[in-house]
Length: 207
Image (tube, rainbow, N blue to C red; front, side):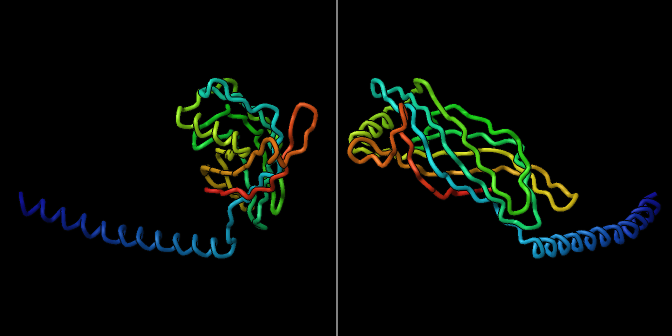
């Protein structure tokens, strides 16, 4: 009986060897093809710039609650000449010292063609958002100094298109620094009940 089992195992081993060799060859060829495609396309991440921010409200009450209302203008450029980008989901919000201070604002889904530029001007706001005690103290000090650094962030999902091929979804994360000035140090332009700041701040992009 053991001889028969050994005989069958030997047959299976002989059959598996060419299958394993074929899989290794296929994976190698696939890897080479991917590297060649990457070298030809030279894919680049989209580029983002925070152009301006209009501040309608930025008030701290009791040192623990923050009410803010901004309209920001963000430009995105696709630097690729052979790759299109689908922005399936893109949420915009503001943070102060890594703490989120506004709600998410969703930007409508859009396709960005080769070398195209898209410009969005969403509102981001938060009403009586609780601020961590250490952030409340820092925020009060920053306002007294006449300058507050906030970060406009974008969090979403993107797909890339090459001819008729469309990739799976990738996580897109964008960080845009913005300096809001007050009092005698203000660099903004008063527009009715709001102050507009020209920023042109380059954003960091992670895909």
